[in-house]
Figure 1 (cartoon, each protein chain N blue to C red):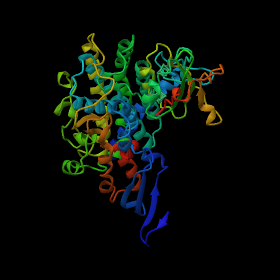
Figure 2: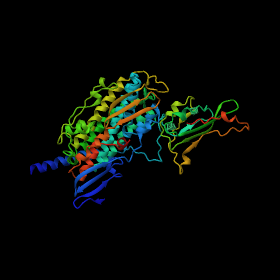
Figure 3: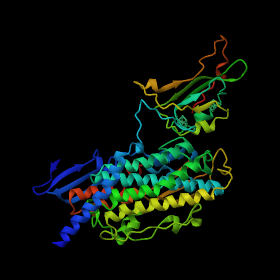
Figure 4: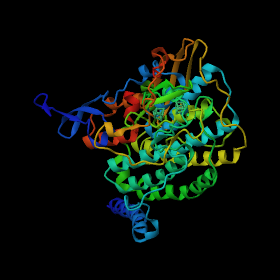
Length: 155
Length: 372
Ligand code: SF4
Ligand code: SF4
């Protein structure tokens, strides 16, 4: 019988210890940690890996990013323009396929060409809406290079 | 639900059951409240990672290892990177080693916090889960600061780590380490020594040391059975042999050695030790390179390597065969949760249904690692 009451007492004591913690947090507004999204939006850190962005005007079309991508999220087609420079006519990044690993960003040899934006809200109603198109399109000039000069860059 | 025969009832627990920690299906035969057999069915998360490894290059596979044990991606990255480094025979700079240990231990804490929280919510106490998540967010912030991701880090790479530590990381980590011990005391008040919780876990599902060996149980689950086996001590890698930390083992404080409460408590103790390790490592950070010189195209020599590392859930091993090309010839992954799950049919025999939840929760399995 004495053991019964002893157990009861120790149980109540252990529950009180727990309640002290929760009540301590309950009455102290300074301990609040949640944020009311979307009213409050958290600013990500500088290295945050959000949506990918390509500064297509400085992209050299070297295809290093498309080759390193483990899930083939980058579709890249280049043609040579009049000055024999590679022109990325198609540069699509499928944000649904992308696993945000960052290998492409590290592989890109041009500074500030391919990088992650801090953007993390880019949901869409369709799959197509999740693909970002950066490509420059076909060159405007009428004469295109000979057929064998065109290169399908992606594996 | 199906009637197996007159006496038993067959129930499928899962795959969408909230306390199976993922998509695990347990086929249980019950006689009233008592289980006569439990059979786990796995494979709902199978993605064929081992096969994928044969199709991508060595560096390209690193992000896939994030998706093995997603609660401890750093540790998975680490084990894989060490395997390839063994094949290549490269030595990594000291600063990179220290950074790796910091990351691995922080990730161990964050993984154990989830183990602590999910077991408590399985046992019907939801509040501790939120407490665990709160501290985990602080660690996630640190990770985000370092590598930009909060879950699938892809930070520890072949040869070192992808980027050096950012400015302010050490201070922020120190801040975290300063208040973390107080939080652990809170967890203990809230949950560990709560008598209802102890009643639910003590003397439940005792794993005896012999059984633990037979089933290949590793990690905190093995140590809970009283066996002092921790790869960080037994087979030190990185800078672990220079660090001062204890390997806690189960002592049967509330019941029998190796019961569910011991397994739970191992994680609390290990969090304390990991915090201690991180503190020491911060002091060991000396300027240096964050990565070794690794060629752009990796072609390891023909050969094979097996490297194991102490993950939060046990021993994670990568067995890698190279045929001298840029892609692995074969990769076999030995995951701790798979072995830990295998003991469930044995433990689940003759217990109450509610105890099955305690068994699964205290083993702290994770499904993407089992199915991989
Ligand atoms: S972040 Fe990774 S998955 Fe995404 S496009 Fe770059 S390489 Fe591919
Ligand atoms: S790696 Fe950089 S420069 Fe090369 S194609 Fe990709 S974005 Fe352009």
